[in-house]
Amino acid sequence: MDVDLKQVAREVRKSILTQVFTAKSGHPGGSLSATEILTYLYFKEMHVDPTKPNCPCRDRFVLSKGHVTPALYGVLAERGFFPKEELKTFRALNSRLQGHPNMNDTPGVDMSTGSLGQGVSTAVGMALAGKKFNKDYRVYALLGDGEIEEGQVWEAAMFAGNHQLDNLTLIVDNNNLQLDGSLDQINTPQPIDEKFKAFKFHVIDVADGHDFDQLAAAFAEARTVKGQPTVIIAHTVKGKGVSFMENQVGWHGKAPNQEQYEQALKELEGEVA
Amino acid sequence: MADVQKIATREAYGKALVELGKEHDDLLVFDADLAEATRSGKYGEEYPERFVDCGIAEANMIGMAAGVAATGHKVFATSFAMFTSGRAFEQIRNSVGYPHLNVKIGATHGGLSVGEDGATHQCNEDIAVMRTIPGMTVIIPSDAVEAEAAVKAAYDHDGPVYMRFGRLPVPVFNTNPDYHFELGKGIVLKEGTDVTLVACGLMVPVALEVAEQLAAEGVNAEVINIHTIKPLDTELITASAAKTGKVVTIEEHSVIGGLGSAVCQALSENTPVPVKVIGVQDTYGESGPALQVLAKYGLDTPSVLASVKDFLK
Image (cartoon, rainbow over all chains, first blue to last red; front, side):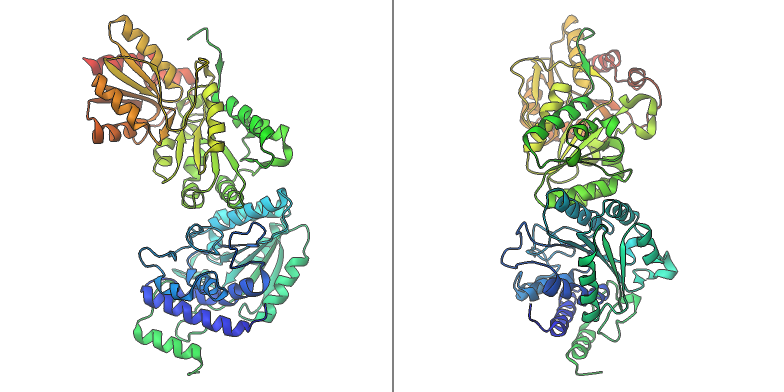
């Protein structure tokens, strides 16, 4: 797709702030850290058609860190899966845009997720089905670095590695913060790369998960890997793009007030440094 | 029923899967390193390419089944009742139930009749937890004939299904040529006027024996086989309760939250009558030969008969 990815990402970031501000709830920090990853997936990497969101041949995406719906919905709306106007209903009663993704409600959502650790297993199941029934779609799942403290993630990784699911690419949004604090303070899953290597994954380290060139190189490399699944460990900044949210654990799941919202939008528009 | 052939419902599960595999070449069957015990391995022997042993990782197995179902293929996920409904409860609720996916859960070794393995493996809570999941169908077949029919009905049903099978060989009594299995429809095995016995699973033949002995004492009991706990055949049960005025529920499951609770709720809203709930009391089981364990915990024919007679006093 011929598109200015940086411009799309800027619009998605503004949308994240607007959704969370309007709903007075949601998860801005992890949404902002995952913005480039999701933008790249839906605008460059995956074969998807917004006019045929349930096409059997489509590539699949599972938001295993299901709480960052503001980023996913922002990207899906930018890509044309549903009207941007609908984003203002995020987390409101009777909305299709539930706090965590619902595959039966929202065009473009391939799996209902939200309970951490579960999405990755469903992605492995989709990849397995692709192999069993000779389909050439690819499957992607985004995990939080805190999320991979869940044991189910490693059950899924063990299976994917043993079954050589090279149609599966996991992305770890490695922003180093979880709800209660830094990974180091809580129960760090590091070294993440060594763990996935031990589970027979091809591991790609992306030094800056907000750099589209680095993401492009990583996803291109993943496509060349045969006989094993790939994990892309993307080093990111929680709250990226909004100065007072960056690397602040307190913005994991909190909405900005009016003043903070306006300040954030100004920063994203480039009006302040 | 001493002279009747006995087959464990888990055997019927394996057999029915193999038959389904003949008709549907895109059916996947999963197990979690219990394929020999659950009999899903029979499917694996026939169709190795469509059988996946997921290893000892039930949460992941259920999640993978959800992923397969999301691509449009039906899948049976198999393990013991304890490790599906218990260990993987939240995966079943959130990854299968919430998106209403076509995952069929084959849960074997339900209830006390697991026997020697003891309390950690005797799941008496599965019906209670599974029936709280919106859109979940819950089935406990009473014999091998019904189990085979249930597996096929589960395949045809659009949505998640939880099926509980047993380890213990039990009498094959649904041998009437007119036998017909329909999801959500109970079967009146014996008509009566004095009391209604509603049973599921291996307690159905016990209920029939109890009814026979009551008849000898002049009590005419109606016996209903309620193979589907959810959706419950409320119409059949309330009509019977209106006729007899007294209901006894009999299940190999905790008295909390299972068949008895479902029937009490249906009756209290429609036809309030006295109800006696017979099942496992608020306690764990223990090791022992299955029939001895069932007897100790009040689920053999003499114990159930005594409870019913006490209730009818």
